[in-house]
Amino acid sequence: MSETSAVPPHKIIGVAVIWNDQEQILIDRRRPEGVMGGLWEFPGGKIEPGETVQECIKREIYEELGIEIEVREHLITIDHTYTHLRVTLTVHQCRLLTGIPQPLECDEIRWVNLDELEEFAFPQANIQIIAALKKSKRSKTAGKAEEIKLLTTDN
Ligand SMILES: Nc1nc2c([nH]c(=O)n2[C@H]2C[C@H](O)[C@@H](COP(=O)(O)OP(=O)(O)OP(=O)(O)O)O2)c(=O)[nH]1
Ligand SMILES: [Mg+2]
Image (cartoon, rainbow, N blue to C red; front, side, top):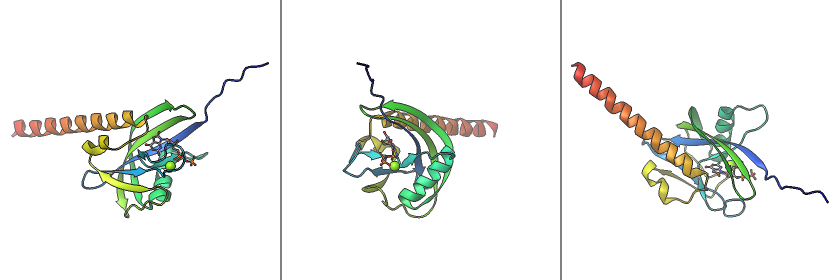
């Protein structure tokens, strides 16, 4: 008898970390039924054939939340295997352009500060996204401080 090793399905996902003008991030709660039900996530979804990650993110965010966003720099790509599922999450920093987000395909949405993210239950793969966000914030803050220092020593 031949042995079959079960290869979990692999989903390739574009993920958006959407910032508003108050420096808050948009998170959504997955519907209670289904995979990872009830957990919070950053909005996004499957990349369709022929689509770039940026196109996927813009489309998914319009479909899921009814808003227009600007897709900015790449933050991190995570390859994570859950018990029955492998995901590749390509995460981009994004900014809200127009509209008020609506929970069209999820249970609930919230704008939260970076420091509040740890209060929400996220899938395992998201721990690395949150760490990358904090690291990026720290280096931006350090960059700003350096800029100010240079400006003040110049004068
Ligand atoms: N959008 C998003 N998905 C995430 C995050 N973290 C994480 O592990 N995932 C997983 C959950 C899902 O299995 C997969 C996203 O796929 P999806 O949104 O297209 O699919 P889904 O499972 O919600 O449902 P379906 O469309 O396959 O029916 O990636 C995250 O922060 N955002
Ligand atoms: Mg989705």
